[in-house]
Picture 1 (cartoon, rainbow, N blue to C red):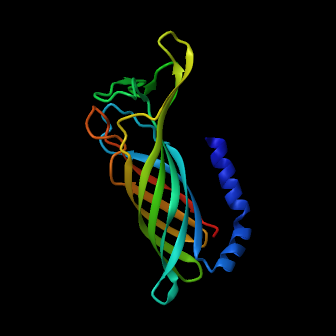
Picture 2: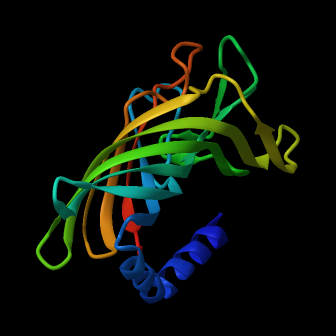
Picture 3: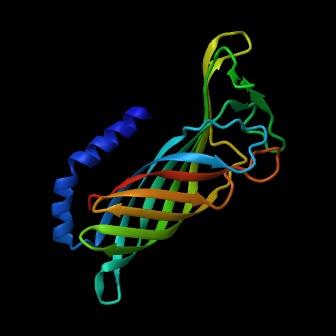
Length: 227
């Protein structure tokens, strides 16, 4: 995951100048953006001991419609993808359970249990972003929007010792008890092709009930939009 994020960031930075030339040719009708962010896990985290660092990324391609006669302000819609990682010191015993979720706790009083290395829930979405973009001065811009995501895959991964003290890599794919739809409000403030980015998910990650935590991620990071 780290290698993928580093590679994407390097490609975005090194193609910025070339992408700006494309933007000039297309009259800024199309925007490609790439977000690198940290998910702050908000909500009722009963049974779920969240880690503070939860790195993720998203990308989108949008088409820009001018607002009125000015080409500086636009309404933008498009298609995107988002991958979220929710790390925790709590582990779901059976992610396929359709009734009550059970958890194993690996951190007590700030001390992490021996043999525990990492546990995460990974959710991936196809998204439809909508954004109102306003430009000021020589390069300042503000974007206010909303996006709808449909979850195409959710999986868990545990790296640590099992009951016999043997190191394992345990994975579950296409797990249950996850909301299929995600709705988020978004905000960007930036200069030219770099912006600060925030997105607040309005529905919880897990379906309500089933002894599940109520997680509503606040994604905070940086956006690169070379064209």
